[in-house]
Image 1: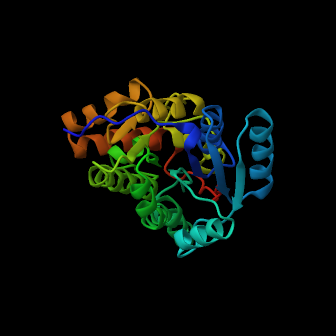
Image 2: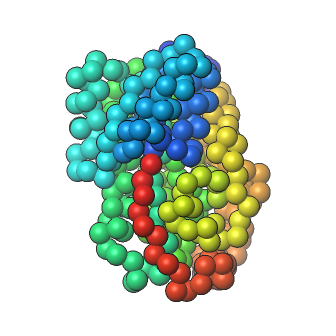
Length: 281
């Protein structure tokens, strides 16, 4: 069993949050600001980032930097590192939150949109982690949170690539959690269920499969509560009712679970559902 870790001193952290212009990313920024962390906010929409940065600077005695950037670019980890080094900003913790979903039958979706989804949801996470993990491990008092999803625990008909990309993030992050043991770095995968954010403006309202949506505040609070444990787990499922889903999946088997999820998604959206236009935070 791994040794207990001291509490996170958030006031000594400079946390980079991707997808910070809205939703869960913006809420991570707000709750970390309340705990005294300096922030680097990354997303494509510069106006949203600037507005959030002004809000957080006005409400808290912290430094907030913004980095407008399309995270689907190749070598994005090095692009971010170069920009931060140029500004002499040392990131001590990371929240990889940026992501989006295409919703509809896989064969009807536009391939460039699907590859962009993979690039943002999975590839950018790998590149950012590979670039910054040596620094985070060496410092040994920060954290890495990668946002997965409840969609990671089973196949997701009509959102096949999204579910697969989040399954990748979950497995990848749990492996990093093991590799980081003994370094002082906390690594955590966060798996929210349906959350009331702009995600559904893109994927469509029916992409929640009829599930009750959580608030972004509740999701982030669950992540930070897991992070604050003396021996943090490799993953946190946000929402009491959501914790049941992985157990149910193991009990009924993958075939039956895929049938159940597929029936629910096609019932709420229709097999011929509209294709969501990609829109990244």
